[in-house]
Length: 292
Ligand code: AAT
Image 1 (cartoon, helix red, strand yellow):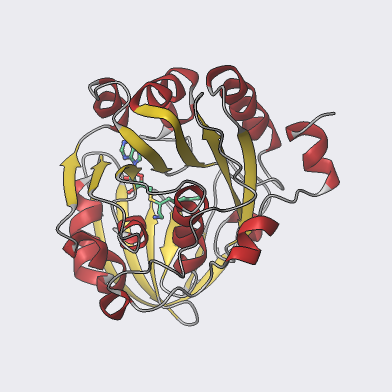
Image 2 (cartoon, protein in one colour; image 1 turned 60 degrees about the vertical axis):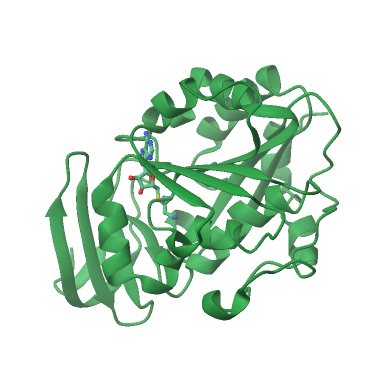
């Protein structure tokens, strides 16, 4: 550990640790669930860290939040009811609220401290909470989904932390089953699905479970986020049985229906070309995820 630097050390990426130079620690606290820290970095703006793992930086959060939202929402026409699991920082809400067809946005985040700290230190991210369509529920996403009436949502977005700690169950089969139940026929889910460089075994497991549960389509997409481990992160995109969803050919372009973009600023990362490209996999990953 180098003095004055933050290093992201975890058994989930043994033998490597990305480091950022720290200008100033702005917040440190222990919530009921995890250690919460915010620091000012030299080159990536403010950084939110939970249990030693980077959740977002001001400079590159756009890549993750825009992709995890617009990949699913641009793949179906007219999304109306959207559920977000995790995502307490509000960045996913900010992106969902760009879609003018959406009428209801529910979010279930386990840790109120993440919400409060984001509102205090990341106003351009937490701006997502200002949309009147948003209802915040503080609680465990697993329990929340079990109580949802069957067929309620057009889309579920699982913006979860890594499967060590409170998010562990969000990567397990029973959770995916309750997501499928909560979706209408032809509804879509997009979940944070780790890195093809580091976690092929986790991805293989998720893919196997999803193929059993989601009778529509099952796809893996990925993007670049420089401050996430290995610099990339992936998403599992699935649809339930019903009207078919072709994730690789978006039917609901965001450029056409971006709403209130003044308060939120314009899209910085997502566009239709990058949407299609995100589903192209390197050969080593394709062999596991899409075996012929
Ligand atoms: N928006 C980008 C940041 C995240 S946040 C992940 C959120 O999931 C955290 O706020 C965490 O408190 C919340 N969370 C964890 N477990 C649960 C649960 N069981 N129910 C509801 N919310 C939960 C993603 C970072 C990705 C990091 C990649 N290395």
